[in-house]
Length: 287
Image (cartoon, rainbow, N blue to C red; front, side, top):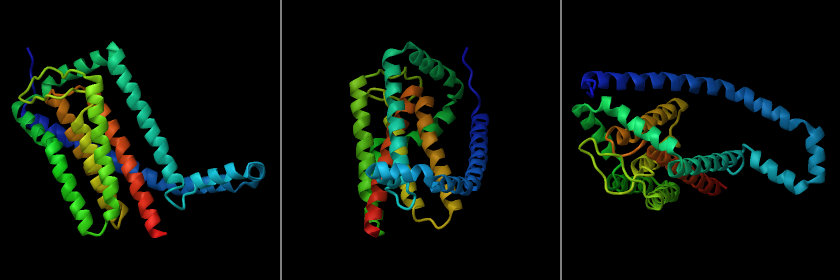
C-alpha cells in the first residue's frame, strides 16, 4: 500500500531544504571570493616566469600570441570566453552521453522508473497543486510571453545588446529540444497524477525553457546590479526557481529524471551561448 506524507510535512521539508541550500551556497560563495585573489596572484606569478614562456614565444610566436589572447583576463574574448567554450563542450559531452544511455542502456531506464516510483511519497494532492503552479511557469506559452516582455523591457531600457543573446538562448534551446524529442521519440512515464503531455519525453522542454529563459533574464538583471551580494541573491533564488520547475516535472510524473537532466544540459548550453554573444557585443560596443 502506497503512503504519502501530509502537505504540511512536505511543505516544511521543502522550505528547510531551500534554506539549507541557501546557507551552503553562501558558504561556497564566501570561500570562492576569498580564494580568488590568491589564485589570481598564483597565475600571475606562473605567467611571469620568463624562462620557458620566452623560449616558446621565440620559437612559436603565432601560437604564443594565440595562447596569451585566450588566457588574458583583461577582456571577455580572452579567458572568460575560453572558459565558456570549455564549459559548453563539457555540457555537450554530458548530454551526448546521457542520450546514448537512454537509448542503449537498460540501467538508465531502470533508474528512471525507480525514481518515478520513489516520488510517489510526495504526491499529496495539495503538494501536487503547488508543483503544478511551478510547472506552469515554464509552459511554452508562458515562456514566449516572458521572453517578449523581457525583450521589450531591454529595448525600453536601452540595453538592446542583450536581445540577440536572449533570442539565441531561447530559439536555440527550444529548437534543439524538439529535435531531440522527435529524434529519440521516448515514451512518457505513466501519468500517475492529473498532469499529462502529448510530445515525446526526452529531453524535458520545461527544464530547458526554465534554465534558458529565467537564467538569461537573471543574467541581464545581475549584469547591472551594483553589488556582488545582490548578484549572489539573484543567482541563488533564480536557481531555486529553475530547480523547482524542473523537479515539478518528475513529481507530476510527466518526465523521467534523465529527461529533466538532459533538458537542463540543453538549456545550460544555450544559456552560455547567449551569455557569450552578449558579452562579445558589449565588448565591441565599448571599443
